[in-house]
Amino acid sequence: MLKLAIVSLVCTALLISILFRMSNNSILCRAPVLVGPGILPDTNSTKDDDIMSQQLKVDAVIHYATSRVIPQQTLDEIKVSFDVLKSLTPCNFLVFGLGHDSFMWASINPRGTTLFLEEDPKWVRAVIKDAPFLRTNTVNYRTKLSEAEKLIEHYHKEPDCSAKKSFLRGNRKCKLALDMLSNEVYDKEWDMIMIDGPKGYFDKAPGRMSAIYSAAVMARNRKGSGVTHIFLHDVDRNVEKVYAELFLCRKNLVNSVGRLWHFEIPPAPNVTNDFC
Ligand SMILES: C[S@@+](CC[C@H](N)C(=O)[O-])C[C@H]1O[C@@H](n2cnc3c(N)ncnc32)[C@H](O)[C@@H]1O
Image 1: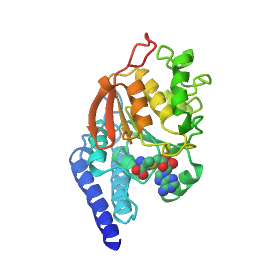
Image 2 (image 1 turned 90 degrees about the vertical axis):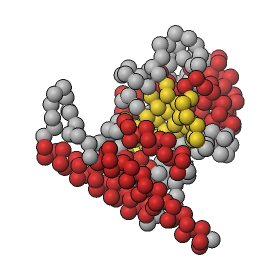
Image 3 (image 1 turned 30 degrees about the vertical axis):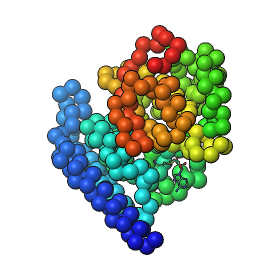
């Protein structure tokens, strides 16, 4: 048991240092960022930003090197999202589920926005106590895992769920729409969305149905150029698989590693009732 704990600890520290060593080349040594057409940011704030983002990375390495808990995704799975985040940072990154990996994601995107949506207020308080700089919103889900099948029937019957309508804010009628998120979540265009929450492994848990549906709506409504990268974890489970096929679509699946699927969703004209 002790041997296993030591091996886990060493592996985690190694994983974080490998990821950060890889990121050193491209994130820490970036060329100065343009803040507007042809405008360079003032040198002092760039220096301050550099110091702060370096400090965040150092803090993250120390945090993981001394932690007894390892994130639930494997190294190979983490690497898929890590590579995309590294290529997009600074970017808008929305994460469903707060966990032991949250510090890592935020520290890879220090000049972007990384926002965590978490259902359990107690768990938010516990995580924030050690990492007060993490940005979190607590979400009240309207669904239960046990309703997953019925909610598919509801989706087919309820006009406000259709891809043609594709809206979340104030969408009371469609039970799959996350209709009471903060304005920031609705108003920002999210370049990357990770779905590794809410809990979906017992009947009364919220399940990931509305996270998957709402992420698909956000991605389809993107106005900016490029695709939205969506990462879905736990695709060995039936609900995740079925909802991904229904809303994220097999044609958009670009990578699959372990229990993680990576989709690239292009903005979509809302002309058909179906998502795929
Ligand atoms: C499958 S976990 C994934 C979290 C994260 N991606 C990770 O790898 O640690 C999803 C949910 O489990 C819950 N959770 C995870 N770790 C927890 C803990 N140590 N105590 C209480 N709840 C936890 C949170 O509600 C979280 O949103």
